[in-house]
Structures are given as C-alpha cells and as structure tokens.
Image 1: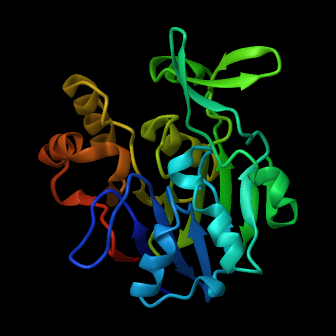
Image 2 (image 1 turned 180 degrees about the horizontal axis):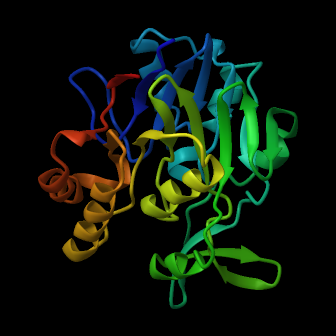
Length: 272
C-alpha cells in the first residue's frame, strides 16, 4: 500500500497556496490520516481545504517539537477536529526561548495550550507506537545541549535558565514498502544523529528516506558541506528538505547529493 505525504505548510508557496515560516504535513497511511505539526498559524486550514482535504478527517496528530512555527496552529486544529489527539513528548512545556546575553524571545508553543486542551493531548514517552507501522522516537544521542547552546536556545524553568537539549523533539517513523521513512520537521538534534538513532532503534530494518528541515539556515558553508558529506555516506534513497534548511543550504546540499535530494514546498505530494 502506498504512503502519501502532502506538504500543507512550508516556507515556499506555490501558485495558489500561501507559505509561512513553519511546517505542516499530512500523511495518508493504511487508511489513516496523520497530521505532523500545524504550522505557525491557522494557514494550514486554508491550505488543506484548497488541496481537497477536510481537517475533520484527521485521525492522529503529532508535534515534532515545542516551537511556535510548528505548534501555533494547534488550537485552530482542536477547534475544527473533534477526534484526533496531538501526540506530544512528555517534556513539552511552554518554556522555549531564544536567548542571548540579557535578551530573550519566547519561541515556544501557545502558552495556555497544555491547560486549555488537556483532553486533546496525548503525552508520550520512550519509543511510542501511534498505530500499526507508525512510531514516535525520542532523541537518544547524548550531549545535545551543546547544539542548544550553539543555537542560543534555552528553556526557562523554576530553577532558572537551562540550555535546550531538545528532549521535546521526536521523530515520526513509518514502515513503508520501501523501508523506514523518517519525518522530523527541524532536526534540531542533527539529521545525522537522528538517522543513527533510528538505525539503533530498528536495527533490522532499512531506512528508505527522510523528510524535514535540517536547521541549516544559520550554518557556515563548511558545516553545511559536512552534513552533505555525512548524508552521502548513508544508504538513504530519498531525502526531502526545506523550511529551516532554506535556499542557500539546500543549493549546497543539492550540488553534492544530486537526484537523492528534493525540495519541500506547499502542495508537494510525495508517494512511497
């Protein structure tokens, strides 16, 4: 059975659909509809309708990580869908900030979301099975707080500021006819780390592809080329990236990866 992924929201619009700094994907898998993230606003509702989907038909929803550009649309989702729960990592809270020196900016989920919709949120931990063939996998790589420090990303706790180690980030993994497909919207923990985490979790299965942003928009050419080299060493057949990868990094990756690499954009349909 084919797996179909439609890009509902992304930075790159198409001729009739708007884009935004955010990501929302709709996955059609074994008769079920799975929403990954809800973008930075309620734009995803308009785009779904224009693409021929009814948000009421979504069976499951997952949040890739606790940032506004993936979570701000969730209240609008709850207002228009009465059955699907959002699967959110257990460490998720309204506490994510970008912070430099004394300056800080909130970049997290809607602040009242966890309290306003407790019956619509499924808190998950460890390796979690959403439904047959669909899994949510947390980070298993130690020391990810060094990435958080480099990105100036922090969490505001009762005990003060702590560097974000992205424990709120999770990968959606699908079993397909071609092999495993990884979906991780920003890959804050590092795309190569995430691929290795999924290999460790599913040692007897081939990884076919990866869909999501790589958070390379603020990286040097050297760092981007290192990621490209590592991706080249994997045996993944299909890689589709966008959102926080942005155009410059995508172009550098494309130079090295050629036909293995594809561009996310609103309205794109991926069939596996």
